[in-house]
Image 1 (spheres, rainbow, N blue to C red):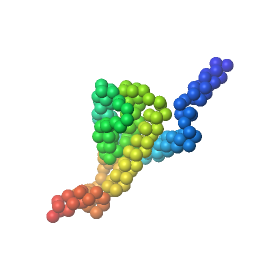
Image 2: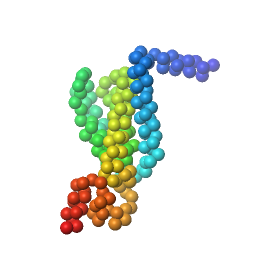
Image 3: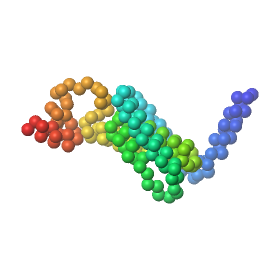
Image 4: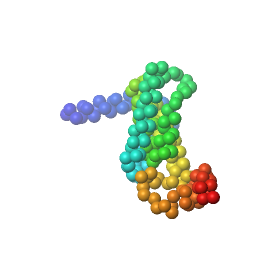
Length: 185
């Protein structure tokens, strides 16, 4: 019987969330964005190869993000338009690391802001984290596909004939192609 009571209390607690007081179309939109983010994180996790260098860089960027959240805590979070510097630490994660790292970092940051700076309705924070996560994931996939780097690990052994310096047409990033051509000249 205690299990049934616990489930009943949890069901009542979920029904009392402020999310359900919103218009139905907005509830559907918020839940769709969150579901899309969870699906994208699952897909990115399936392609992830964990390396020490990626973990070290992620840890460094996460530490810098946490420090900026703590600095925000001192001044407080203002209502309305907010100018923050969190993108300074999150965008490099999306560009330099595999997609999953760039997608997880804003989720951790938003959770830290909720916990350490200012409480807000949880559904707003979760939606914000999901939207940021999707955008950094899209930026990561776009950058990696345009640069020709793919989702390759920086620790992977690459034969000399496939490197940017000796084979610039395979590199999709024009400054790297120009640098390799100048070096050949």
